[in-house]
Image (cartoon, rainbow, N blue to C red):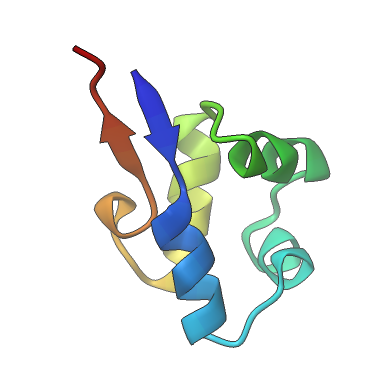
Length: 68
């Protein structure tokens, strides 16, 4: 199973936000941001805070790719 946060990065660009802006608005750590940068799993709580900050749904920021 692979995680992809490409939708999140595009959403940030569309909203003219930088990663540090998201970190402040969603109250997430640089460690969480680094994990997402490497397409690693992060806590559901962190994802929920991002969704609230960006007024979106989890499917708008994350794709889960199932390996065969």
